[in-house]
Structure formats: C-alpha cells, structure tokens
Image (cartoon, rainbow over all chains, first blue to last red; front, side, top):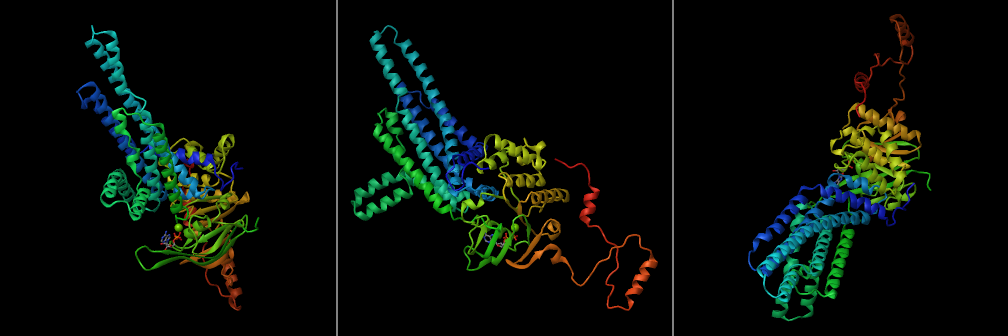
Length: 295
Length: 284
Ligand SMILES: Nc1ncnc2c1ncn2[C@@H]1O[C@H](COP(=O)(O)OP(=O)(O)O)[C@@H](O)[C@H]1O
Ligand SMILES: [Mg+2]
C-alpha cells in the first residue's frame, strides 16, 4: 500500500513528475535546435575577432555569455509554454490528477523538469565555452612565449599572467549561475501564463514581450525618474511593473565579467536570492490560477 | 467509512460559453448512488453529461451545485482519490514511454516504489496481457492495447473504486470482449466499478445497475434485467419442435386471453457471430 500519504508533500511524486517532464522535453526537436544554434554562435565567436589577444578574449566571452543568456531564456520559455497545454490536449493530465496528486505537486514537478533541462543545457554550453576559452588561452600563451624569446624571464612571466587573467577568471562562474537563475524565473513566469493562456503561441508571445520589457525597464525607469522626479505614484507604478515584468537586467552581469571587474559576493547573493523569490512567487501565482481550473 | 462507494447529490454543472451569453447545462440535478462491489453503468448518448459527471466525481471539474463523494469523502479533497483508479475517454499517455515505464510512473504517483512497484507492474502487465509489449513505446500501441495499459494504470495502487469513461468505445469486438472480461474479473475481486458508455449493448451483460442520462438528466435507473424486461410478455424458446406440437400450442391459446405476439427463430447477435468467426489466436 502507498507509503506516502496523499495530500501531503511527496518528493517521490515530484521526482516522478519531474523525471517524466524532463524525458519528454529532451525528446523535443526544439531543444536540439536551440542547443545547436547556441553551440554555433559560441563556436563562431572564436572567428569573430583576430585583433589583439585581450580583445579576442573579451569578444569570445561577450558573445558566448550573451548567447548562453539568450538561448537558455528562449529554451525556458519554449519548453515550459507547451507543458500544460499538451497534457490537457492528450488528457494525460486526467490520469495524473485522478491519482492522489495535489495540483501544486504537479506544477512543482513540471517546473523541476524544466529546471533540469535548463541545467543540462547550460552545463553543455559552459563546457563548450570554457573549453574554447582554455584552448585559445593555450594557443595565445605559447605564441607569446615564442615571440618573446630573449626578453627577461620576469617580463615574460608578467605578460603571461596578464594574459591568463584576461582569459579565464573566477567571475565567469557566478555570471553563468545568474544566467541560470534568470532562465528559472522565466520558466516559472511562463508556467503561470500557460495556466490561463488559450494557446502556446499566446504564451510565447506574452513571454517574449515580458523578456524585452524586463530587459528595457531599468533604462526606462532611470529615464522616467530623471524626467518626472519620483512621486509616490511613479514609485508604485514602477514597483508594479517590476513585479509583473522582472527586471532582467539585474541578472545581466556580462559586461562586468567581460571587463574583468570582480563581482562582489554580496551582489551575487542578492541577485540569486531575488531570482529564487521571483521564481517562487510566479510558481505561487501559477498555483492560484491552476488549483481551481476546470480540466 | 461510508457504506456507499459513490454518492452524487443534486449535482448540477453549468458550463458558460465564452464570449456568448448562453450556457450549457451539462448535468442537471443528478442523484445517484453506487454500492460497494457493484458494476454501475452510466449510459446515454454523446453529450448527455456522462464524462462531466465522472470528472466531477474525480475532482477534475468542480460542480456548479451539489456534491459528490467517494467512500464518504468529498471529491474536492485530494485524499478522496487515494483508492481510486481512472481511465479517461480516448486516453493518450506519454507516447515516448514504454508500457512498463508508464506503469512505473503511475505507480510512483501512488507512492509505490522499489520491489513492490516492480512486482505490481509485472502483475498488471500479465493481467492485461501486455508482457510481450512492455518494452515498446506506447506510440506504437493499438487502440485496444492503449485501453488495456490505461486499465492497468488505473489499477496500479489496487484501488477500491475504478472509474472507466467509455472503456469499450473505438475498440474492436475482440478487444471489447477482453475489456469486459477484465471488468468482470475486477467485480469478482470485490472492486467497485463505475463506467460510462453510449452503447447499452456493450455493457448490459456486465453492469449490475445502470442509469440512463439524457441532456444531463437521469431518466431511468435500475437493474439491467428489470429495465429491459417487458413485464406482460413471456418468451418461450423451444428446441427440436415439430410443426404438430406448434399447432397444438397455437390451438391451446385460441380460447384464452393470451395472444401470440410473434413467432421467430432466436438469432445470435452480430457481435457474437463476429467473435465466433474471428476466434483466432489473440494478438498481443
Ligand atoms: N469544458 C466544457 N466547456 C463547455 N461545455 C462543455 C465542457 N465539457 C462538456 N461540455 C458540454 O457538456 C455537455 C455534456 O458533455 P459530456 O459530459 O462530455 O457528455 P458525454 O460524455 O455524455 O458525451 C455537452 O453538451 C458538452 O458540449
Ligand atoms: Mg464522454
């Protein structure tokens, strides 16, 4: 007989739902298409610059991190948008929810499946990106050593150290983690939209708008405040916009990373927590919209 | 614990039609009770409200008025579905899963795992005769096989109540026969079955009781033989009768109030004929 009591939170059930969602997503053609495209962009960044070494690394990082950010976001939206509509259309949702599965577990399971998929793709993209960076670094270092034969040893060592610092630095990892948090937040928002959307296309269009507004609103807000000053109404309005459309620019530390500026731990932690809060709030909204939905 | 398996009280369901003023009343003031161990058939033409009623009982759709209960627990409680299995109408499962993986998945949703889950899965695959197909993805299953894996999925946690929406619709007579045999087997094991069908002929031999819905209203309810009996008529079926005996019988009736309504040779049903003629080895 069942070990876990129905109605109570069960990790076994969530794991089963997440596993099935992940397996289904990995079979989507769109997944490979997006991943392949991201790989092409990251790979081609090597050829985009034949300038000085430092600029080459900057361009490689700029293009690769930008590609990772856009493609994981797109993947989060496209993969999540079709989850609930497809289950409804195939009536698999009836067989699942006719079991003693609370609806919030169904939603958590679905989101976890997407998060696994996003983790897998960002790992694959990071491996390619860091691999390329490493190989380029080796090539450039050996070229430097060759061309600087005869110079004083200390000077050569200094040059190599500068080079290495401009290629790989520890800032890359928090930057990549924040790209993941941004994608997680977008997935949760997409899940929410898909609980009441009439079609996948509607969800995707709404989410692309949310994505664009999310990236532009920081600039718009700065401009607004500069032009109109900051009355309480303006603050309330901007706060509302920031809740509905998350400020995605906060998650974008690519410029700092490319420039090699250190990301303070506090900033990283604050952004990560913000990502988790947004993700949980959207998941909660999704539950509010879904728990009484007629199937 | 209640002594009624399923109780439906004054159930009404109204679906608003978006962007129009009008509404669809799918179920109107429905009352019914299913006793434990019974096979209950909800019959009616397409659109009469059968699926809606079943979905409300399973908590998938909320009632506009009235209540439904499963073994005394309100359908709105997640826990009411603890001992319930459901096979929806025309079900599609995840096509990329094999038959075995599908049962593992639904078993885990019911809290089974490890050796118990594997044993239960094996048992069910044998019961619905899909052992040979267990490693094939459902994308390649026939309609009858899907219906059987669907039934196995509904039975995974050994439920006390099984709800089947049109279990024999779209299945060939042989597959339909198999599904009916499985339902009779459930009944023998004391499991309550609530099923729907738009074809009385498909279920009349397995249902203890039926309710007939028309436009969301329960128009008839009762035991199948009672509902079908024409009370003032009696049928005689005679074997090897010669014309002389028949003539005598007719003469005997001449001066009584009894009227000979019809004299005919009993016919087998087309379905039995088909089943007998195609009685080859069953396909997996
Ligand atoms: N989600 C829904 N929205 C609007 N109308 C619905 C919905 N589901 C069912 N109906 C309507 O309710 C009536 C009963 O449908 P249903 O319960 O599916 O009938 P049956 O299963 O007996 O064929 C039909 O007229 C159908 O159009
Ligand atoms: Mg129906």
